[in-house]
Image (cartoon, rainbow, N blue to C red; front, side, top):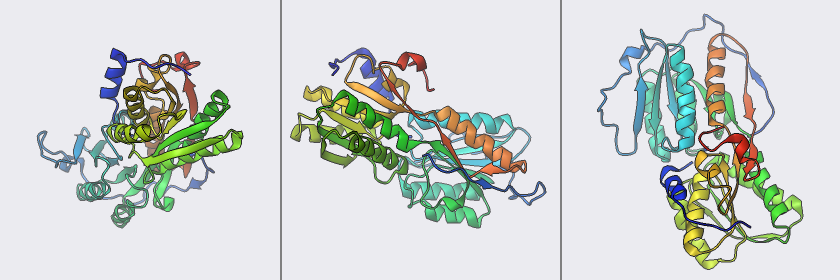
Length: 351
């Protein structure tokens, strides 16, 4: 078990990392004919003033398409999360590379705000919507509005409660991302012990990761006792607060599983402050966590690729617009990164 230490690198990582990011059978959806009617929207009506106030919970990014073009909308659970910052940039590169406009809004992990922002984007004339829900079921009213407005929906990273709304979905194999963490823990702590789990029940991606982690330790035959399991909301600050309380009551835990890397970083800060050294696992493969794997109690991260997810779903949307048949479900590979293989992936960016 690695010893912990406090370094300038850790401080930088903890300030930088913010709140959060599913394998399945592939099916296909037929695209509309090339001359199918499109939503009547003009990009030149979609450009707000640079200093437009969007509300306390809303952050908007928009670059007008040169000479018009289609208008795409983007919503994710938390636009300040480095994972989603990278993913949005990958989508934007594809959309703007095709001469079109991308309107991005950040609900700040608030489901009601996300619904309101989607309604706003509908009024702005979006024709294609990239969707990542704050709450898998809570977003359904917004999906109904999009459907009524004949806006085609493409999902990414986290599934919605009813996948029939989506033309296509691209996301990490989240179950496997958690499973490989559980496998690694069982190998490294064969004697078992008490553990903590910091999940987020409203986020389907985190639920899938947690399910995978728990299944792996169950199948290992090693006895682990979950002495604390709480909702960290995928947020570093919330995770720090939850882990602080849990570690006060359970200082002898051998491991902590966090549903994403910001959660793992929050748990790490709490463990460091408490003077304890459990093995800590996260999911994302973020640069901040990868940079700390060799020298701290951060033991591993189930890595995913926001760049691949973003490019894949954006390119899929254009394939559909071009009349091609697209897969309904596109799983993106996940894998474990630890101190043993982190040099293969680097620590200065996402894989």
